[in-house]
Image (tube, rainbow, N blue to C red):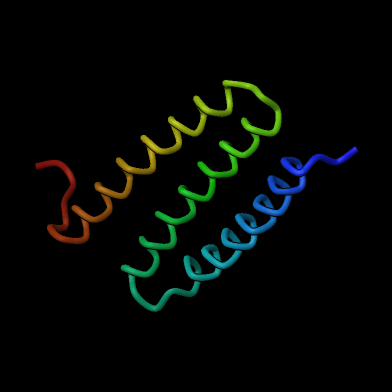
Length: 92
């Protein structure tokens, strides 16, 4: 029997996957590099959300740890990309 939590997580899963599709389109087509960086930033956030939803659905802590790693790597990559866009180099 489907519980309300499983239905809500399933609906949220579909919405996040749809957002990932739109972000992928913007990543591939985006007219400027700023649009592409923003789409990439949103993609890692969506990936983190998918991991968190799977952790809630299955009740396993490994998904929450994976979400934390995705957030850390995504934040560092966003900072590196913006620094590269501003100065043309990452390491000073």
